[in-house]
Image 1 (spheres, rainbow, N blue to C red):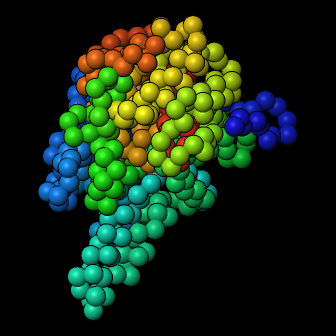
Image 2 (image 1 turned 45 degrees about the vertical axis):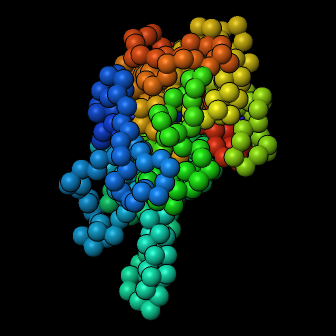
Length: 413
C-alpha cells in the first residue's frame, strides 16, 4: 500500500532521522556496530541464556548486556523487574534520546515492533505453575510484565515522557512496519516527533519453536549461498527519532538520513513459507520506490531480508531480479543477518539503522558467511566490506504469514 498525505494544504512533509540507537550481538551503540560490520565480523556463539542441550541447534547471536545500565528515572524496583528484551530496548532508546537532542514533552508518540516481547516472563510463570502450583508469589508481577505495553511504558518512564504507544506484532516485518507507520505519521502531519523501532530478546520458547520447525541452521547461517540450510537467531533492539525536515533544520539538529518511501503488503500464501515467485515482495519494493519517487536503478544498496533458508532466499532473489530489471546485475545486495542473526521483531528496525550507517559512511556491509552463490541471484551479493558511493538504500523485511515491508532511505549531506 502507498501512503498519501492526509494534510489539507501543501506537499507531504519530508521526514528525517535525527537520532538512532541500537544494540546487537556485535556490540552496544552505533559505533560498535559500524566497527563490527566494517570488519566483516560474525557474532554467533553458544547459547548460554537457557538450556539448549535437547535442541538440535545450540548457537545464536547473543547480545552482551553491559554490567551497568543507567535506570534513568525508573525506581530501583521498577528497573529490577525489567527483562532482557526491555533492557535491550532501554539501551537503544537512551542512545537515540541522547543523539536526537529532544526535550521531554507530555505527548510523544512511540511506535514499536516486537514478536516475543516479554516471553521470558511467560516462561517463568508457566514453570512455576507446573512445578510449584501452590506457590503464587511473583506470578501477578509476571503477568503484568509479560504484556508488551508494560515494557514500553517502563522505557517511557525511564526517559521521562508520556505519549501514545502503538505496538506492531507482524512477525519479522514488525520493526520495519513500526518505522514505516511512524514515518507516515510525521509525513502526513499527524505528529511532529515520533520514536520508532523494534526489539526482541532471545527466549527459550521461541528458540525451541524455530528449532522444531528445522528452520535454524545446524551449521552456519549463509544467506543466498547455494548450500544454505537455515537461519540463525539473534537478539537486539533499535530505535529512531523521526521528525519533519523543516523542524530539524530550524533547531540545527544533526541529520542522520532521510526516509523517503515505504511499502507493505501481504501475500496470503502460507503461514511459514513465502509465495514462491516473490510476487508480494516485488510489489512491496515497487511501492516503496514509487512512494519515494525513485527507480530501482537509483538504489545503490539493498539490505535483503536474506534469512538463509532455502525458500525465503529463492523467492526474494526472484523478486529482486524482477523489481530491478536491467539494473539487477549492478545492484549491491547483502544480508547482515549473517553477522548479527535474525532479530525477529527488531530485525527491520535494526536494518534501517544499518542502512543509515552505510549511507552516512559510504560503505557496503557484507554477507560475511556466504561462499557459493545461489544461481537465482542475478544481482551482486556483497561478500566483503567495501567502500561505495551511495545516495539511496532499500531494506526488505518479510515475515511469517506473508507480511512484507520495504523502506527507502536517502543519504543526507
